[in-house]
Length: 190
Image 1: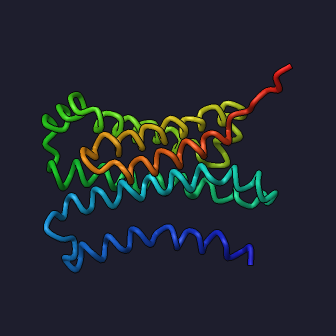
Image 2: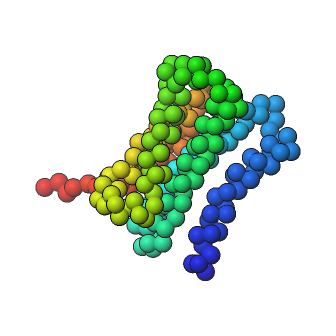
């Protein structure tokens, strides 16, 4: 059973990609296809951030350590969907027109924090292997705490992007803040 759990979770994690690929291939993206792809991949990035952050609390509350085995995979899917999100913006929306992209990064705070979050994911992906854990030792854990900042940036990106309907972005922010609160170690007050 345990042998099939990780491959099964991997397959389930690819379902959003298969859904958006199906919609693209069969022209089912609606009247604003670029917007649909962008929002879909962005939301799945946030979902995978929440899944990644939930592994440690699940281990703590269930006393099952196998949750941690999925954290790296979920983290890599964060990068996968975030990269699809970014590529939709750069390739499909702006067609590699770098000047307006650069202007957006500088002038629009939601694009700035989104791009910053993606950049911060790169060192996490590069150092996600077992070999890098051995090389970096205790610094590996410090580096991978960047996911907390990335999670905040991702939720701010969604909030600042949503000009009128804030309910859904705020739900993600609340979930992320709750998941991050499990990492706070309170010292006993004497």
